[in-house]
Image (cartoon, rainbow, N blue to C red; front, side):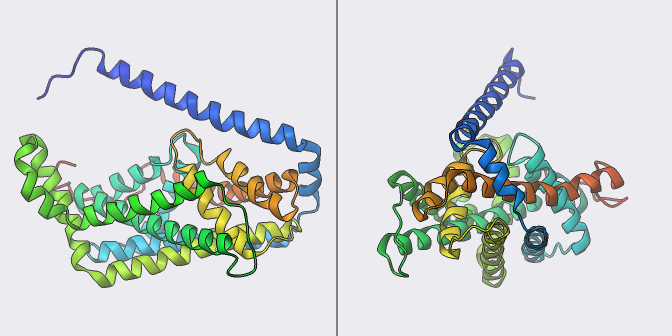
Length: 341
């Protein structure tokens, strides 16, 4: 057993607390400033004219997004011959979404999915690989849509030219490069581990080998990866569509193209660890772009809050599942994990 340095746990707790405080400070401070600048009364006036039928459609689109994500997870698990009942995967995905949206972290839901699936199939390595690849394929699709939208709106290809902030453009391009590098690294993980395993601690070699082998399977299964990418693109198109429907519900005369730009950029910016659940990031990006087509900041913020509310409402289904089925949403006789992860 490796001894832990004295005070290590206390230091980690302090760091976690400070990071959480920073996220609340940045998100809360930026959001408060934007609301104050836009006038809360104007935001409320925009909400009062909302079309509830269209908001109901937005909720249905968000539900469909989660259903597609669970289906993509199922496709990736089939590549490992670890097929699971789709209703179970969907339920765990809802629980993960609940954790992501109601806990101060964006990876808490992934951890829940890894643990629950790992217990069920008896391998945390395969569980981790499936969740990681499910996320990574989504990031690839996200970066693709964001960069295509940036090119179109920067070159006036479709008759709509926008002023794209250099920082956002560089961020989207850099995110795409990181996502591509992560895919390349994942597919070559078995080779990399064989080449550099001597530089790793002996205690880490076995679990890392399990993960590398699990990731390597996806490199050989092109059909599964193509299906996953197709489902990722479909997810993001529906996710963008949900925001567009929210805009229609608030009588916002904005074209679909601007949503195809704003929504992916918001998701990319929101991945920064200084934001809590995209709060502040979403609102800032929406005001930057909608103001260019004559939409007031108050209306842009009303749209951001509406889309966020739809997401919270749908993810609360996971909270209901926790209440009904308990915190441990798995079958009665899970397999014992075969690996150390």
